[in-house]
Picture 1: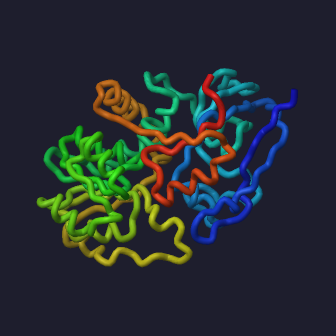
Picture 2: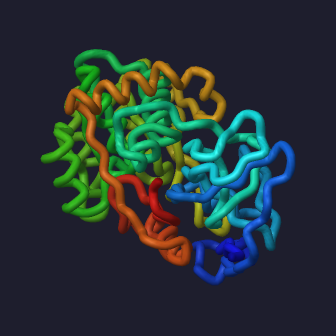
Length: 337
């Protein structure tokens, strides 16, 4: 029986906010692997803010997606057929299958999932690019020290929620910024952040002054924009600012004004550094060990929001930019083995 590959293509480039109309649905026969290739069935698809950046005409850290091609996306899947010497049927792998139920690959960009005592979805919500981003950005760039104050934006998101918890493990006072009382309650009451600021209903600068009486030593930035502006006047000498994302800017139709007080970096002799976790995967093993150990000891928690069916991927992506999701947003494309 002929199997059907269900796909979302990039039909047009967004002008401002992403719309469902930017995608086109296609169904076609599942391809057969050739020598040196394997066929992957996608199980989980990760939805990330970088999906929006990839949709632009300009290259990012990866080339722009050509119009009419399968929408790029990070996924976990199972190898169903293989003519590749490095992969066998039944292998669980992670890579970039895109928004489709099946994908052919020559192995480039794919890795086998390491054995870990966690649910399969945790390879996105706790491990994978999410956990590694939180671990590297905070520990290698943020360099937390006992007693320091750490502020995290998008603190109820997949990365931010892990950053705050790791900060607590390292002895920091942790203040999270999130949108809405439910998210703030989750990070404050369940994840044990020291304080939570609701940017939708509070003056962020005044709340930061209240909750960071000793100033800010580390700011883990996931959003950029006005929140970065509110943080900068409060940073301490030698503060560190890992720049992980700027989701507040991704739907802008014109360049947004830059922070108005970057001079604080000079005054405070502070460091602001952007990073992409793809540059640091060679050092992933120690981070995975830490994350799995903390999870097994009950010191690290995660939350997933699961959307059923690849047909719902475009509408689910919009949640990232309206702030409707909490934790890691995933699409379940097919069943686990």
